[in-house]
Length: 298
Image (cartoon, rainbow, N blue to C red; front, side, top):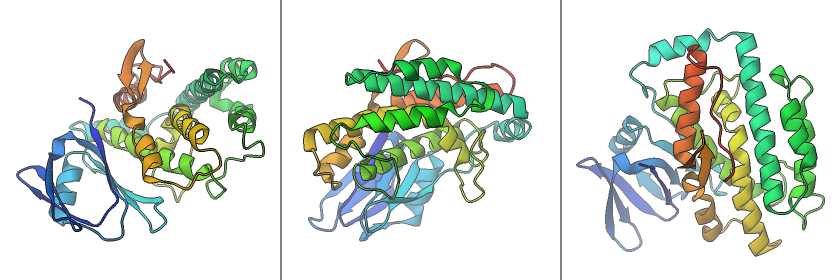
């Protein structure tokens, strides 16, 4: 069953009772409940939200990714379960002992899949991507020739026709804000699935920033980014240059976990596909298989 993504953007009191999340609106006093086991990601996006420690503990116990936002409504933090898999110690050890050649091969697969999905994204909106198709099969071990950067330069230059000077910059002008929000949701989904698969989100196969607690999540989410880009492209198409983040735009971005993708020749919601990806990565670390399962556009 696909887990739900919940968003709270108004003053409220959140607590738990009988394995349920209990939500009480400060504006109306209305009470609502939801089984905690049905939740995958929970986003707190208001400075007057109150959440009990008991609820936080229950959410993490059930492997919910808990995202907090700042006063600009930008995701700024994430809490994850520390004990997500019954064989966690063994899987940690396999991850820690992964050889450099294996990591370089896994990064090659990751970048090849990312560029292929970028090509699919562009072609879905009638933008030529023959060079991306070529680059996706030319990626070498460790992406030695930096095809990722070559593909990104072409991809973003052509991605938003009404923004011909667009540059992908987390601190840049809209629609960077929409991409940031969507990627934060995606990052939470991937980090949650890594923990569930018994892996350490901190230890990447490529990313190594000592200040980044989610290097592996940032690695594995790469081929999934074009699915977020697709949602953002549609928002831009409908709204033009008026791209301050609205509740409706957030609602569209919150649909990302339920998007249909194809993985291992089967149709699957994106959140379920991510779990298949991280499970396959754990098997690669353990020497049980050689290829990570990544999604494709349907």
